[in-house]
Picture (cartoon, rainbow, N blue to C red):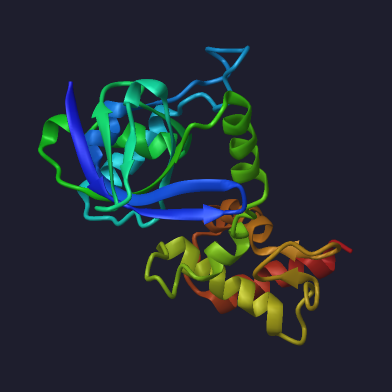
Length: 237
């Protein structure tokens, strides 16, 4: 067992207080745990860990990826966490189960997979202290319901800007644009590019429907694909 001391900022939001700081991933891997509901149906509230997702996070870090979002933790009694207001630091014991993960369990699981590889990586953390189990469960609900995720359609639409489009995605984007703007398009005014809209076809749905057609036709010309598919739509009325 070792003792860790880190600089933090004490933040007060209403009746809640928490500490904001950073931790090395080896400390997170060696001191944080979860309580999946599948394993603890009485007091557990976390989802079951997805090893594939954790492996993807570990690989992302190996390849130089950055993780700026904070892992949210709740200090447990065995952490022996104390706050020094003069030095603006917290001190705690690095022991498994010292912190309960409220958000970021797959990131922490991915960090654990890097422990024996000598990877140096530091990430932001938010640490609550002296929460009751009820408060921990409520915070978990708030974190996972009040934060609206970015629409998949928007993420798909900015892939070109991020230079992460595959060849198929580039072709599908051009095809979507043709159906979106061409005056003779069967789908004119029926498409939604960046979000879901009632009565319109989202970009995600469009891509999923067109991917098998790309493989079947094996045509690299967007204009030719558009003409063939558009004519098929009109003939199928």
